[in-house]
Length: 211
Figure 1: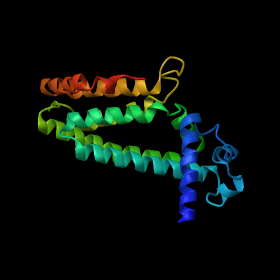
Figure 2: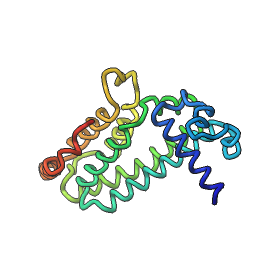
Figure 3: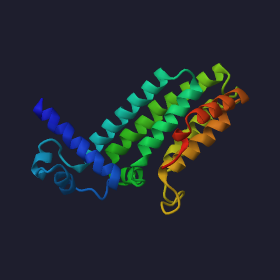
Figure 4: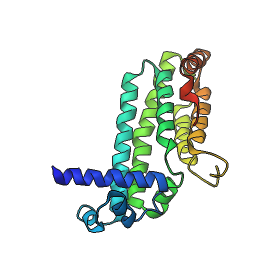
């Protein structure tokens, strides 16, 4: 049990540093200093930094999967689900280094493969299900092409991290993600859906403020 606790502590500490500083700039020495342990202790649990990054990525995507599943289960309708997902994304991105996905794609292929699997399987299935539900409820337009809009949404999420599209000195990651998601939602809504969404916004204005 203690061995497992130590491993989890290592993963949490590494994740904190990766989210704040990105992947490339954080070394095994940095992780050891952050946790107040020797680098040798880290190597007792992980072969190298690449394994740390891959394991942290899997843990992070599992956490996101659980959050999204809970949101879906707790939401009364597809509009409320999108509202709650918007809040979740804003909170998740608030302290995330924008270089994270770029670093992962370029330097850590195991982690990148893990992220792509999460994106192309779980997120895609979740968006398709949510949009189909919204159409059935009358909140989303019946004439939309679900596969096309789902693909667009998946690429929007990733595009927000691209500093060549959204330079970091001009745009904040949480605001970009929030704006892209809201644009996506308005493209889905029927009049009935738009009115319900605006009602949610009026009831919870603090959820729509980017800090």
